[in-house]
Image 1 (cartoon, helix red, strand yellow):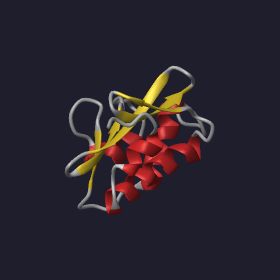
Image 2: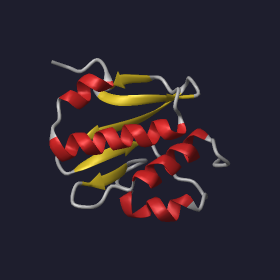
Image 3: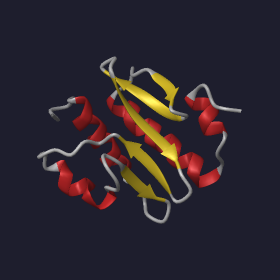
Length: 116
């Protein structure tokens, strides 16, 4: 069965992976508390300003978070260790998940809290 809500998507995971997904969701909503949620391309998506989406998903070895476009903002230095392919951040299960950084990246992408 394909998930139609983020809750259904999360229900498909157990243990640490589910915990990490829930923490990503919470970090996003700490910045965008009223953001609309949906499933797009089979992944959880959160709407920013009614147009753009942030996606996150569980993979075999990491949580993916995208799109995170490159910029000249100083936050680039902090997210550099997590950058993978084009506009993707990967948070490996073998490392502590930086929930505060995920919230700050969300704020940066959404242009809230002084972030551009």
